[in-house]
Image (tube, rainbow, N blue to C red; front, side, top):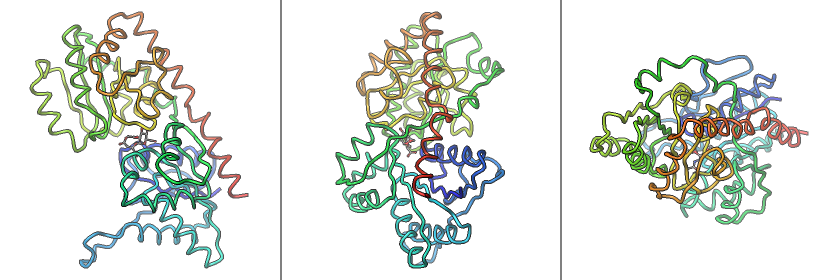
Length: 373
Ligand code: GMT
């Protein structure tokens, strides 16, 4: 098959899932064309069967706002036509689904049929999508996609609640290539951050408000009062500055490290004992799944799709949003006793195994087959 994948190329979960999906499809012999505005961070060097088409919006001075969607649409028309694509798979509704719809209409006039699948990831529905200025376009482009998928049951339900949808939404969960998260030798990092074998708490995100990283620091402070522990924060984003200022006021400030964006998180995850994800909203929680793939139990919230991914009391614990007291109590429950920690670590890994790419890829392939044939 020749598949066009449209995505956001940044560190966000939707871009990571879309890139990994494309890489896996290419490894199986499909021809994959990534279409976006800069090279996806997780793409690495280009390899067999993978092509990258950059969308370059014009900066003509008349445009106060660069019309990205139109340039993307033209690029889609061009790539579908000249690379003879069989299908487009767009990740994130705005503006990818509406651009794909427009490209489909343009191509139809030229007697070229191109089906497209839209995958909803979360913030496109629960944050951005809720904005009334986007609502009609989102409703229309979901209803006019040839196929729609959502990454969790919770996101599907929320989409049906928020929009007037007349299209079936298929739930296909996010995935990881579990083998790629395994590291046998990682002692260098462990010694660097926890020279006295302290426990390591970790958080990875894009540092947006929805992640409630303040709760990570509050939880950590409570834990550090009882047990020697370090906190590693990976990622960057709008909240980072003020969080660093808060962390500097902590009595444990010397044990809190902001590591910034890392192309690969497995080195940090593999030395961590607990992953903290106290988000107010999380349609799936790919970061939690990546942690579990590295045998790290998760402390998170009952929001959105997290309870579908993290099994409460088995691969971690879930609390009400903002209940840092309980999150700290649960973290201590896991890390205070080495036997308990080992149990949670292997449970986390068992949970992650259910989301290995080998289980999930066939679900997307079946949808492609159905639409193409
Ligand atoms: O979490 C973010 O802010 C990034 C966002 C994205 O669009 O990349 O993540 C969303 O999609 C991920 C991949 O499907 C999910 O794992 C995240 O849970 C979801 N984020 C939210 O719902 C806040």
